[in-house]
Length: 150
Image (cartoon, rainbow, N blue to C red; front, side, top):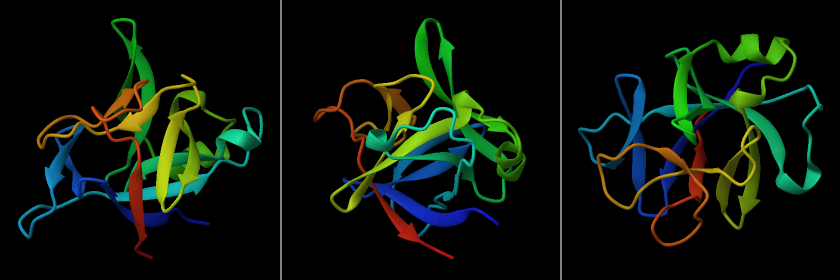
């Protein structure tokens, strides 16, 4: 078993780019190297919630970086941690690394399992951090297009 790989973009056609240990948004142009998102379903059903979607781990492909959520200054924050996604799969469910993957029409939504009501989001301007938000409105994008790569 290996992660399913996708290219990811938001509804404004912004892609995710790795900047050090951060993910930032960028318009999709020829000289931009967007990340490839690896997605694998968590086998441990401890935090399973049918209504919220499929429980998944997310990685930045070929970088051994996984997305996880932790509280920084009292606010849930999206981080990248050096971790092999397949190692996560073999362990008991690691809540900070887990996201509910839900479909809304042709788009995907990712909600933090550790912080219910917080969603992966991109701001409407380029060069900004990919974050977590509670606000699902016009100020942030929480809906993403995933295009299968492998």
